[in-house]
Length: 82
Image (tube, rainbow, N blue to C red; front, side, top):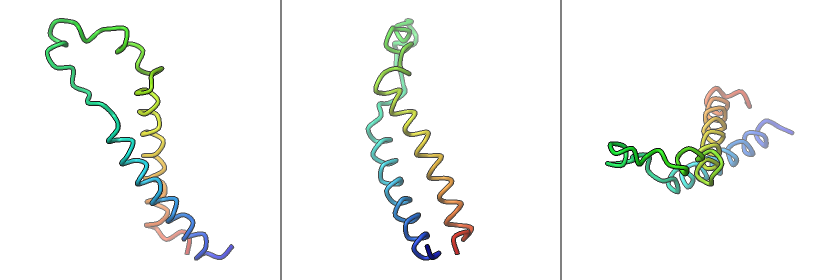
């Protein structure tokens, strides 16, 4: 593969990751617990098992997409692909 084809593929992957990251972040719920934290209502079964829920999966996907975003940003910025 030539450098231009590889750079085009990485750029397209970068754009797809950017769009996916924006969508995943917008789909997540807020982290504020409001007045429930004062009364102790914030410690429920749901909050203790968030890692196994769909919200926990979305947090993990956000972490992976963020890492890929940073890595691809560095690769495109430093012109390693030519």
